[in-house]
Length: 150
Image (cartoon, rainbow, N blue to C red; front, side, top):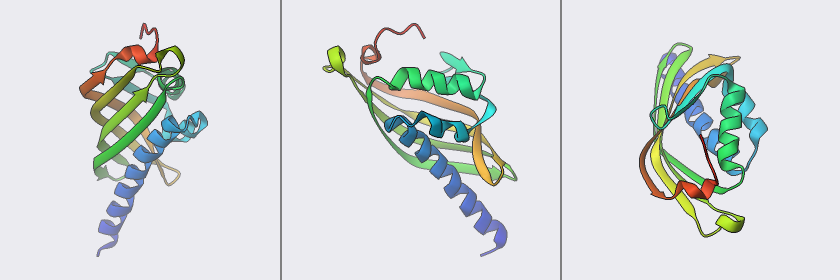
């Protein structure tokens, strides 16, 4: 195997690991883990630009506001990554279950969708420069998240 092919495989695995680390941070409520996953000037968009952010801090605050007060469980699969030097595009399918707590314990929301991102290699680590979640199927109700204005 050529060195270039080996590096491509290493990079693809690192990008897969980054998506996995992202959902682990959400499911285990480890918000500080997200700091190293996004460049400071990262952007994000959700559900065809229903919501968007223009910095790492905004992204983390947005994600945290949605999932901090609910139980979550994310399953990822069907990973893809296209590497171009120190830039890449990656994606994976996601199934995310959100369970209500307290007075919303009887509610749930489950999303079937796609996470995708533009990435850059910095200091030998891949980080998101743009992150997107697209919704394909939604079961249950967004009411599980409480009152939301977006």
